[in-house]
Length: 207
Image (cartoon, rainbow, N blue to C red):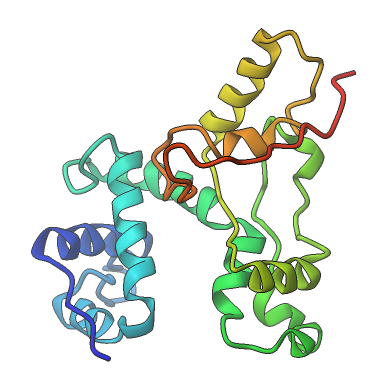
């Protein structure tokens, strides 16, 4: 089924981002990814990734404080680096790339779906692996439970730790990471409805 094309503002954000990560090169005489012909090809080939692209464009605006397009070149690049750090979460990326691939085939295609996180850095360093080594089992459980990975911003990780510390509980930042997923943030959110009951496990003592 064909999806609705991006709106004009969404296309503007995509154009600005594309031109930031792949700029034109006068030295080599090649256009940037924001070239009209190249951008038109990108827009025409979205299809399956349409919803993910829309969510990514919204996140870029969020990281930019409202409007990615309104930033200057240096600011756009800084936001692009921050966006890349968030969007590179290995398990989340693997779930998207392996969608529709049987679990029993994942191991043979490890490098297709599970790639290392570039320079990971977080207060919750106890779960900060460059790869999610048990990702195949994780995906199996996620699919069975109809769940999904939740990628949170570092600000939520810190807020969760500070909140639990304020309550007087000696839990490590890694142990409070589950609570971070429930805190308000600029990401896609958890999908938890108001009044819904949830369980959060604090696993990890602060030492």
